[in-house]
Amino acid sequence: MKLTEKLSQRDGQTPFFTFEFFPPRTDQGFTNLLARISRLTPLNPLAISVTWGAGGSTRERSMDLAGMSQARFGVDTIMHLTCTNMEQGMVEDALREAKDREITNLLALRGDPPRGSEFWLPIDPGFTHAIDLVKYIKSSPEFADYFCVGVAGYPDGHPDGQPLDQQMQHLKAKVDAGADYIITQLFYDVDNFKDWVRRVREAGITVPIIPGVMPIQNHTSFLRMAKLCGAKIPPEITAALEPIRNDDQKVKDYGVELATTIVKSITEDTSLGIRGVHFCTLNLEKSVRRILDALGWTHESHRPRNQIIDSAPAEPHLPSQVAISPEHASKVAVTALSNPPASLSVPQSSGQEDGSTTTDIAGVSSTWDEFPNGRFGDPSSPAYGVGSGDQWDPGAGGLGVSRAEAISQWGTPISIEDLNAIFTRHLNSDPRTPTTPFSPDPLLAESRMILPQLLDMTLKGWWTVGSQPAVDSAPSNDEIVGWGPAGGYVFQKSFVEFFCDEDSLRELEARVREENGWVTWYAANSQEEAFNIWSQWALLYPPNSETRVLLEKMRDTRWLVSIVHHNFKEPDALWKLLLDQ
Image (cartoon, rainbow, N blue to C red; front, side, top):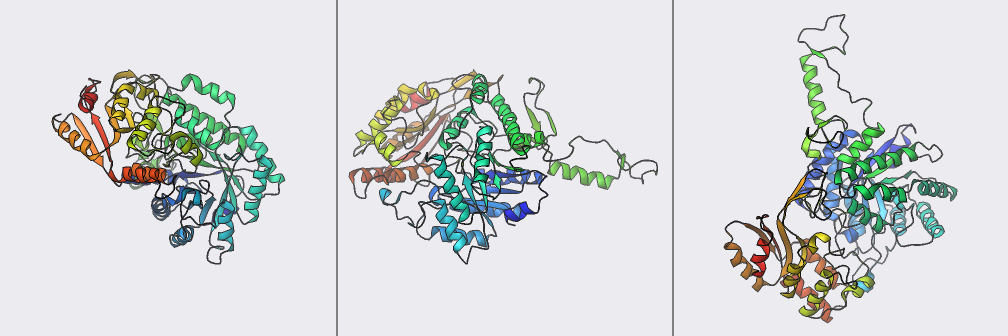
C-alpha cells in the first residue's frame, strides 16, 4: 500500500514509526538481516525502507532485500533510489523491477554529485538532481499512478552547503514536481529542527514530514556520520559523550536516552503536526527496541500475568484472567516466544552493575553483534561495514572524497614507487595524505602501535588496508584498543590485510605452511570489494593515461591477502612470519 494512503487512514493521534536498513555486504549478513527484520516487524512498523548504493552499486541486494521483506513479512517497503551516476536505462529498469516486485513506495535521492565526463563514465545525463527523478516518475504513464514518491529534507542544511533559502526553494520544487512525503536526514538539534519544520510549512509545503532519527551506537561512528551528513551537534551532547566515549555500552545507553527525548519532544509538540519518526537502525536491533519501549509505542503492557493452567473447565467463579486451558496456554507461549516484546528482559549476568545491560527475551539473536568485534566487525553481521558511508548509504564503499580532494591527496602515480609513497605518507600521518582510497580516515592509534611493521611492509610493495596488533587482556575501556562495556577485557589476535604481487604471495604461502596451524589466511585476486576501489580510483584519470593504466594493472594483477596469527600471547609472531623479524 502507498505510504500516503496508510497515513491518511490513521487517526492522527496514534504514533507510528518506520525502520531503515541497508543491504549488508556479505551473503551471511544478508541472511542474518532478514532474521532481524522478522523479529522487528511484529512491532508493527508502518513500513521499512531499504537504501540504494550510489550509482546502483547495491541494486541487486537492495531489490532483493526490499522485495523479500515485503513478500515474507507482509510489511510495506520504501525503496531508496539514487539517480545520478547511473548508466543509461538503469533508472527505468530499476523502476520496472520495483513494480514487478509490487514495491509501491520510493525515496528519490540524488546520490553522489554527478561525475559524468569528469570521470569518463557513460552516465544518464537526464538525471542530475532528485527532482529529475521525481519529474520523470510523475510524468510517466507507466509509473505516475503506481508509485508513492518521497524526497529528502535537510533540517541542518544540505551537506553541499547551499544557502538555506535556496535549499527551501529546492525542497518546494521537488514537492511541486509531485513528491508525496518528506523523510529528513538525521539531526540532533531539536530546536533547529522545529524551526525548520515551521519554515517548511510557511513555504507552502503541506506533504507529511517524517523525521529521521539515528540512535547513537558508537562514539567514533557517530562523529563520522554526523560530519558526513553535516549534522549540528549541540554542545550539551558533546559534553555528555566525552566522559563515556570509551565505554560502548554507556554510549549506547545515552543514545537510547537521547533519541527517546528527541522523539518525545517533536511528537508531543502539537504545533508541528508530527506523529511518527523514521528510525535509521544501521541494521542493529537493540537500541530501537529500547527506544520504542521507553516511548510506549509497541505494547500497552509488557508485565507478565500468572494464570492457572487447568485441563478442566474453569469454575464459574474464576475469572478468565485467572484460569487458562492447556491449549490456550500453549498458543500464548508460542506467540510470545516468536514475537517477544521489546521490554521483557533479564540481567545478562549477576556481576554487572545494576541497569548496565539487559538482554531481551529474543536472546542473543538480537544482540550478538551490538558491539564491534574489535575494529573491523564480523562479516556475518548485518551491520558489517556500517559507518563508511552516509545516512542514505551507511554501508557504502567507494573513495569517500571528491575528485579534486582525491587528486590533491594521491596525485597522479605512474609507478610502484609512487604508490609506495602514497601509502607511506598516510601511515606517517602526513597532512598531505590523510586518507587513501582504501582508508577513509587517518591512521588509528591502534595501528600506530605496529607502525614500524606496516612501514616495512609498504617498502616491500605490500600496501596495507587493514591491521590490528595482538592484545592480551587489555581493559575494555582502554583508550586505544578497548571496546564494549566497561569491566571487561580485550583479547585480540594480530591481523593484517594487504595487496601484494603474485611472487610475494607464493613466498608467503610457503612460510604459512611452516606455522603448523598458528595462522589462518586468505588470498583473492577478484570478486572482492577492494578491487572495485582500484577501478573507482582509476576512473579519476583519462582513459589510456599512465596513471589509469597503472591502477587498472594493480587491480588485475595484485592479490588481496588477509592473515591472522592466533598466538596473541606473542605480539611479534605475525611480523616475524611476514618480515623475518
